[in-house]
Length: 99
Image (cartoon, rainbow, N blue to C red; front, top):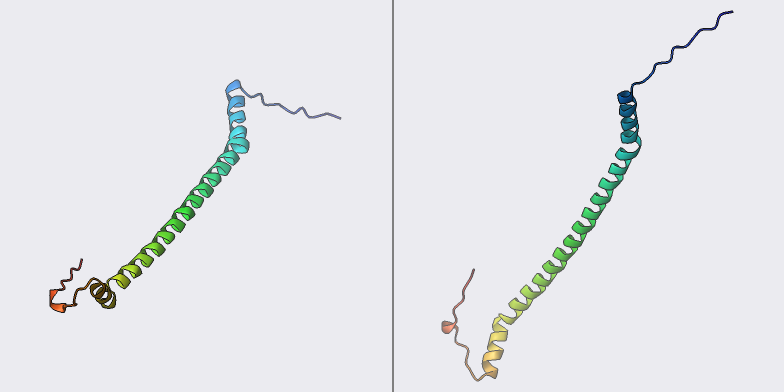
């Protein structure tokens, strides 16, 4: 009975190096890059949520201040302040400015 000889292919030094780099890239660099980019994305999303909440708080403050302005600029308030200061309310002397 004859046994078949298996020819072994010898790799050159450059081929071994390229194979090593391929394995390193496939099993080490790609997964670590994936995890790193996911971490950056999560960090960016957290910052975005913080900024969105700050914007919402500022909008609420602006709305409250706008309501306060409307309340202070009401005719009833103007008449009350004028009467406590000893002034009379004269509609002809009032000038309004709009934006």
